[in-house]
Structure formats: C-alpha cells, structure tokens
Length: 88
Image (tube, rainbow, N blue to C red; front, side):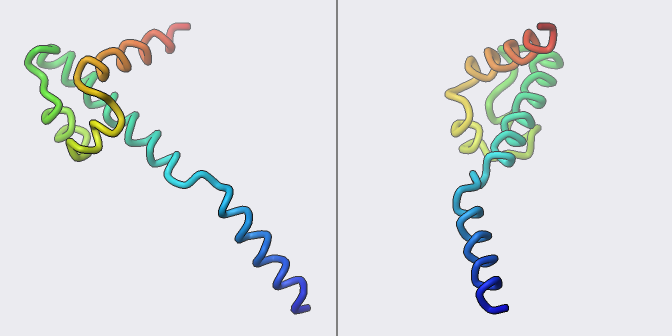
C-alpha cells in the first residue's frame, strides 16, 4: 500500500531527526581519553604527562581533547571523579 510506505518513511525520518547523533561517539571519545590519561598519570606521573601524550595514547587529536576537557588539570579531575564514582 503506497500510503503505508509513505507513513513508514515519515516515521523513520521524524524519529531519526530527534535522535541525538554523535552522543555515543562522544562518550566513547571521553572514555578513551580518561583511560589514556589514567594510564599515563600512573606510569609517568602528572607532571611528566602532556596533553599531547594523552592524545597520542588515546588515538584522538589534540584538538578533540580540548573539545572534551579544558586542559590537563580538568582531565585529572575527571579521572579522579570517575575512580571515586566506582567506589560509591
């Protein structure tokens, strides 16, 4: 039936317009950055770890790091909060 096909396409179109695109990818990017930061902070210490090191270790561009976090201090704070949340 042509009307049901049209309705199916409309429902799919309206549903896809409301779906937040990129959110799972952003969560994945954030988790990869936190994992890399945690690993490097433990391995080399906070002072010897750079944002470049974290970006390289996570496979994410340095610019994308700054889309998620304002800097290395913000990354450390997020790593600590994440670890505290695991115990609560």
